Image 1: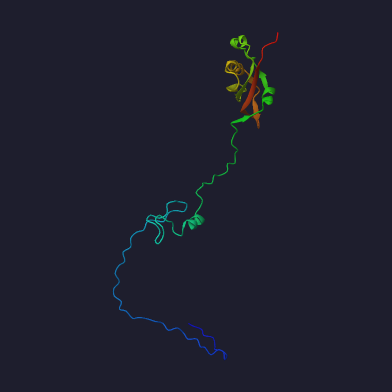
Image 2 (image 1 turned 90 degrees about the vertical axis):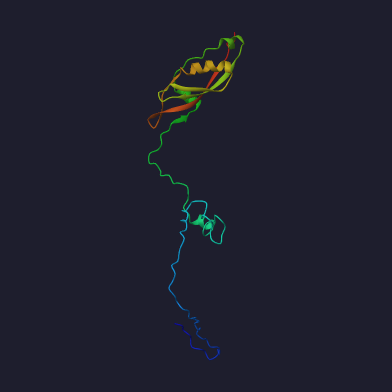
Length: 186
């Protein structure tokens, strides 16, 4: 239905209702339409677009464009659930002075005879892993002369510490140990 407002006296133009244009054609029995099955649309967050491209678009394109796809898709990154139980600490590093304060048994390194004959002095720095029971589990050389390093490693492997506790539980710790090799002056 078309509503035409009453014409004002000052406006001589009249509005006319549009006339429909209809062409009569003969209608026959419709022929069945054969449709080809199109591949399913890609899931949100997938890449690669549509096989064969988007009609009127680029081959391999995405319907609505890549920007639209990005705005409407869910993120690909999985969201990890937060664990209510904190993960246990496997190993922590402590300062050399703290480790020295918890040392309960130490063995002095044997001065290597060839280093003594050659009058070699020096410092060997080791990184030691102290186990939950206070024993030295692993020792590696950080710096120092190789001639002195093996004697330092052999001595430190025999050391014992008070176990380190974190929240009442024993933990392994890493600590730096410095061994000074000096000849007696005499």
